[in-house]
Image 1: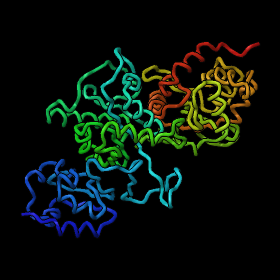
Image 2 (image 1 turned 90 degrees about the vertical axis):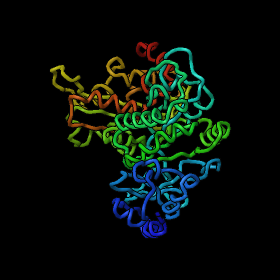
Image 3 (image 1 turned 180 degrees about the vertical axis):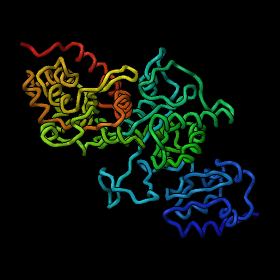
Image 4 (image 1 turned 90 degrees about the horizontal axis):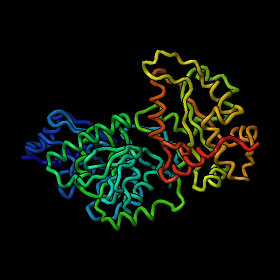
Amino acid sequence: MSTWQRLAERLGAQPHGVTLDWAELEALTGDLPDEARTSADWWLADVAVRPESASWHDAGLRVSAVDPGTSISFVPGPKPWAAGATPPPLAAELADPEPQPAPRTGRVTGRATTRPDIVLVEPDREQGPHAAPAGELFTGPLFTREKAYARWTGAPWFVLSGEYGLLTPDQVVGPSDHRLFTGSPEHRAAWGAWTVARLELLAGPLRRARVEVHAATPAVSEALRPHLLGLGAYVLEPLRGLSVPDRIAWYDGTVPRAAGPATYPAVAAGDPITAALGDAARAARPSDLLAGIDPDLRRPGIHSWFVDEAGAAQLSAGLGSRIAPGLIWIGQAGAVRPGSGLSATTTLRNQIAWVHLGRSVRLSPLRRMLAAILLHAPESGVTGEDALTDWIRTHLRVAIVAPADVEHLAEAADRAAARLGPQLSVEHADPAVRPALRELRSGFDGFPR
């Protein structure tokens, strides 16, 4: 017969979390139920389903990882709210089990505000009749708001599909009527393992990553949760237990009507290249960067460009859609495709100084896109090549990364762009503005003479 008082006392003395081996766990609890000995799911249920979980929830802890028969880990975390209760207005704040540097996202009443590292959204049934990128295929009112929220957080986001598993917003798929909750428990378990494995492949290691799950059906959430927790992720469900109308009301009350992508860095968990390229705090004025002695400038690499508030307003006016201060472009210098036999000779210095700050929109896709937009914003003063160079020097900042693996530089740049979504990239920007970007770019053939 098991008892949970001694476990509660042990965990109550460990406010920062603890990992117990299985022998110590059983010494504290006595004989465990058979399911608890063999299934991680048993340990991940809420208090309403598994009263024993009050032993750690009352201590301010949650189960982070469990390997039945070997060990179990508890970390600080919120006590789950009951189904149907009103959740907090934004993602729950979690205390890290180890001290971490304070984030640069501002502070509220003395505590660091928390944002997700990854957002997962489940679309509703409404979808277009033909194959399209996942971010555009689904058209229902719930998914439209989920997408707006995900972009507003600035975090990498993915679409959950009962048929296709995990989809990036740009991944083209056809319409499907398969819903996960109609499958067998075995199918749902396999789907959850497959989906989380693909997430870790695309987003990097999930340990300590804050993953927000926006799933309208409990089957989706429960299929993902044990696998996410098993990899050490923090699983956040701000809308758990809410009906679809209540979810829509929550999104409408959370996302500002005129909101664009967040201006803080969109860091992809576990990927240092993407994290560095998305960190606006690392970016410098092009002239300051080129005047320095950073040795990375003499190497091939990847560069990311950020626009300031005044520049973003002028781009918004020229494009006719809101561009937020923050990341607008990711490019590369010296990339070679694997197996080409070519060597990388272009350096970051040459690419930035002679291409992007040069005198020809025909040589720089960044200059061409900026020129095509700013010609429609008279207040920008951009009417020729010299004026465009001055505008870039005034309103843009650039960050650089020079990975050691030059052969796969192009893939690293593509991966970072897919995760960070630079706002002026035809391939990776908000699908709602891509047609306008594509039209402006194709219709621009140089400055008027």
